[in-house]
Amino acid sequence: MQDAAAPPAWRPDGPNLVVEANNAEYLPGLPDGAFTMIYVDPPFNTGRSQRRQQTSMVRSAPGAGDRVGFKGHSYSTVKGILASYDDAFEDYWEFLAPRLTEAWRLLADDGTLYVHLDYREVHYAKVMLDALFGRDCFLNEIIWAYDYGARARRKWPAKHDNILVYVKNPDRYYFNNADVDREPYMAPGLVTPEKAALGKLPTDVWWHTIVSPTGREKTGYPTQKPEGLIRRAVTASSRPGDWVLDFFAGSGTLGAVAGKLGRRFVCIDSNRQAIDVMENRLAPWCGAVQPADEEPAATG
Image (cartoon, rainbow, N blue to C red; front, side, top):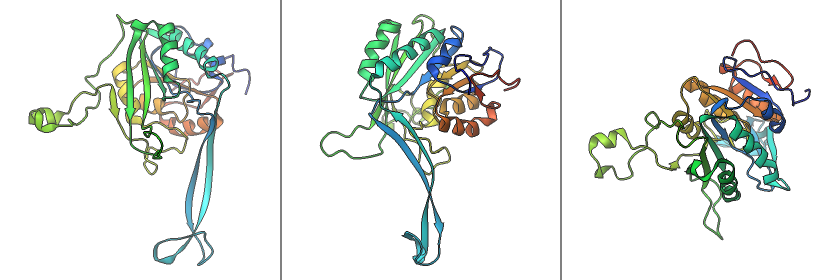
């Protein structure tokens, strides 16, 4: 890996890119106004390392395994790849603020930024983004509600994330919710059968399950977000052929959604484990991963 300050040459008619780089060094090399939609899911500053261990069960000789399964057969637990990243920063906003400033610069005049955080930092982010974008550019605070994980006993369990949505220009931003997936009515008996069958347009509260631990979508990367969640944002805030960006790309969910919806994407991460996941997951829509000192491939 060479100097990450020399990014691949991006061009509007170029290939989709997955780049292994420090985003603070890479982003300044991208041109102003290049992206219609930017989604970022930065580390949440939980103060701990995020880890996920893949395991599998292998049949073993009778009595030799560490688990007993169906019909008394013995099985051994085999630990697979350990995915992890550091989620602790001495000064979180010194880390995040310059990156969000770059996001403002990179948005097209009709562009939209989605910043995915949780209850620990979202109130600080709202104040900072109001100052950076202007309060009139605040569009929504989306609440992603789910029901999975630990059950707190000494407080109300936290079962939602916050997604702050800001637009570059409040008079020109692109938004089209006509094609997003609809939700069931909570009281279908109160609407006509036709409306109940069609479903209702989503509000700013999105009920969506996490990525299933046993589902086909699962990559094993910690904090992977479900495609259904990101698909709604991409569908509403970009058109087919538009460029979208994620510079905390992780498992590459934005890239996977963008590829399926006919959008062009740039996904950036400095974590080698994330790059390995994206190399496999995003292969149908882009060529080889671009280290930050190389030119992009000729085709996407």
